[in-house]
Image (cartoon, rainbow, N blue to C red; front, side):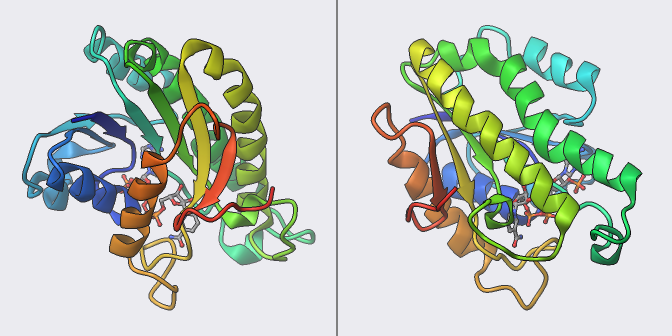
Length: 228
Ligand SMILES: NC(=O)c1ccc[n+]([C@@H]2O[C@H](COP(=O)([O-])OP(=O)(O)OC[C@H]3O[C@@H](n4cnc5c(N)ncnc54)[C@H](OP(=O)(O)O)[C@@H]3O)[C@@H](O)[C@H]2O)c1
């Protein structure tokens, strides 16, 4: 049995990750901005504790760390993310800079903030795992000319986590980034390729395979290696 912390747990891929881990009997620390309105999350059975966190707010993330002090966490999943400005407002010709900055805060800086707050918990695990949900759009090897702001936030995230893997392996913590597929969520839209259930099932299996030998990997939800 593992203890798993998931951000953005109230809907989309995060909610499905909660359901998958809860169904196999793991202890789930399900984090969301507004627990009071997280009705779908509250309905998940099993060993699920819902915790409040606004991942861009230093005080909120610090409070989460303080609340969990002394508790070993085996897997931290940075899942919360935003697409940023409307696609038409994040192009080489037109940019909503405030929206881009916010997307950087949520997609790039918040995973680092959460990681740092929970490092003692990960170190307390027999073998901690730090997982961040990225996007194929952050791969420098993939030329999708859309969502320039969003793509750049995930590219920066990827670089940070690739380097972080080299450091954290010394602390017994393995690190990876995972592209969840194009998923039918509020973010992915109805036309997307796969369901949140398919994505989450693949992500859980992929995380099971994370170890010291493959730390620093960039995977797709189905366990295939993704090019950087
Ligand atoms: N769906 C896709 O096709 C796709 C493809 C590639 C990558 N991804 C990545 O997969 C992850 C999950 O995406 P999704 O499709 O499940 O998105 P989603 O349905 O839009 O859900 C996003 C989640 O992130 C939370 N969140 C956003 N900003 C937050 C903040 N400041 N503090 C705390 N929580 C915050 C949201 O909480 P609220 O409900 O409070 O807003 C929500 O729980 C993201 O990192 C996304 O970039 C998704």
